[in-house]
Every structure is written in structure tokens, then in C-alpha cells.
Amino acid sequence: MFLILALIILVASLNIAGSLTILVMDKTKDVGVLRALGASPVSLVKIFAFDGLVLGLMGAAGGFAAGMGVCWILKKYSFVELPKEIYYIDRLR
Image 1 (cartoon, rainbow, N blue to C red):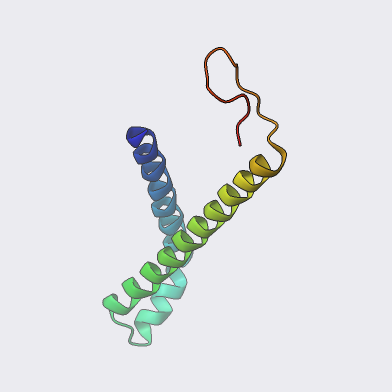
Image 2: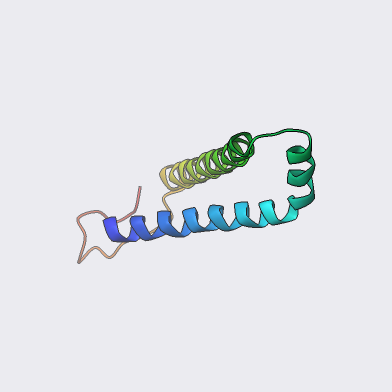
């Protein structure tokens, strides 16, 4: 289970890194304008790091909400039946 979760987190982090790379490539002109106006490289890194943080937090919140929604649906309706010969319970609640 740990390995599966670690791989999911790895894929999600690579997805965020790829999105930020594409964002930086799309915003090359804007970065040039900010540099011409006197923005330091550190301030540009902060801007894109904050964007990555917001993107990650939104994804985490969305995943949490979806997981809680699925748990609520399973608790309320319990439509997943389990084989009685193998498990001690007959439904997933």
C-alpha cells in the first residue's frame, strides 16, 4: 500500500512540475517584461513557487473532497457486496 501511494504522489508531483514548466515557457515574454522592470530572479521564483503551491493545494483539496464524497456514498448506500465465504462482512460500508 505504501508503494502504491508513493507512486501516486510521485506521478502527481511530476504532473505539477510539468504544468509549471509549461507555464514558465508560456510566460517567457511576461518574465522578460518583469525582468526589464527590475524584478529580481528570486521574486520570479517566488511567483512561480506560489503558483505551484496553490495548484498543489487545490488538487489536494479536490482529492480530499472527492474521497470524502465516495466514502459518504458508500456509507449511505453500501452497494458494494463482498463474498461471504472470504470476508467477515457482506457489504462494504
